[in-house]
Length: 577
Ligand SMILES: Cc1ncc(COP(=O)(O)O)c(C=O)c1O
Image 1 (cartoon, rainbow, N blue to C red):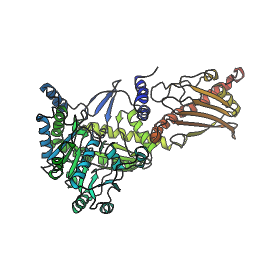
Image 2 (cartoon, helix red, strand yellow):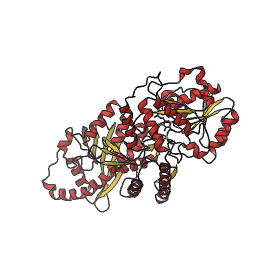
Image 3 (tube, protein in one colour):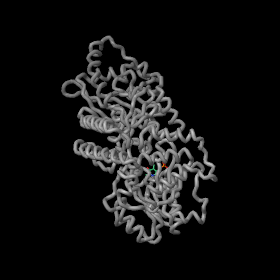
Image 4 (cartoon, helix red, strand yellow):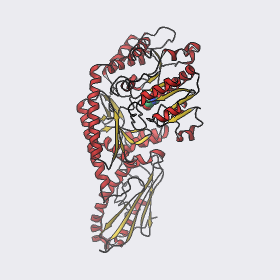
């Protein structure tokens, strides 16, 4: 029988996003239930603590009471639809408030729904304001998934699929002032940067970099656009991260936390000079539902929360706890962790490879803690919890992270386990029993060393038919048709492709006798979930399940051989197909 989460995983794979579905399934994610504070429940009532705020969305936690009260209030008011022609007070109050937050330096705001949309509009404004064609953006940047934002990040893998990109984006290395100086010229409309590059792996620029960017823009008559989608609302220790870097951009884009993770709202904030453009063509900026009353109401309340002194003090204290703890973790686990970077409550832990990230992510989930990786650097685990997380919960989350790393380090270091960490996995083990006896046993019960088998003791008769396996991926019944073949020197198992596996093959080969009359077994497990760039991260977790199960199976093999040895004479061999 399929679990509820598996039914949904299969449906998501069939109708929405196969790779994300497989990733969530293999990592052990359940069906989302109610959320509160920094925790969310699954359908079984199990609580998961967030060490990541889902790219800024859950900055104020799940179901924040103040935000919900504001929404209720607006619902009760009955002012819910945008007329677009009447004066919508809540929207007007919100743009006033945004201007105040910039001390009037960016007095205008355009309200939209999502982040990518704001960047597109910021770029339009920059071209219209300067009359220039060129943009300078930074390698590794992530500004969204629209055409303009994908053109800004100019990733080769995107160009293959979506190319040609929009013209005149020039990429520079983030943090390199020399490259920026060479790129910004009289043709440049704007330099587009994140104050801290989130999806590149939480890259904090070197001191003075943003100030230099500001200076170069001023010298060349270009605009500075900052994407503060993840860094604003206090995340870096001030309402806007650019305040911490001591610069004022011409345009800043915000979103995500703005809507409390519940409603879509984003904004482009700009100077008076930039807004001049709208005089010529007033209708070029606008959105059907951008700045609707409910979104604006929640936006106002999000700002109210993030500007309270107590809130920002709390962020500062928790930022110190995270920074100190992660610095210790780098020293404690050099075999796993390559680096730690961060600012405020926005941190990343870089592992040596993707499969470690997958292993650790899965381990965290198993221990009731959620996080994720950086989109363009999947080796980097995000430690960016909701800013409202309690100190006790933060401590518990970091404690769990250390425990999972301890387990991962032990798993990686074991000699009796396969050295590869993802597909194909090969394990050689010795048996004290003669090759003939082991071979006979495997030919009769080919699933004895199959880490996916529901019933390792299943005999060859069962193997000849379609077999329903219960996987060891969590408690799910991973169902697929499987076939067993007898080889001269062992057995080979092959699953039919199914929603989870593009292919799954296992083989056990019995090698010639070793000194003590025993033999050597070579177990090989090879899989492909068809997840492209995410294969090795998913594989890190599958590899963990496989090797853990194999350890148990190998340990029980000798016991079975003992028993079988005693029954050898009476046992009849059944042929495989
Ligand atoms: C820095 C940054 N900019 C822009 C975006 C795009 O925002 P949205 O997904 O709301 O379009 C994101 C989303 O993760 C982001 O992190």
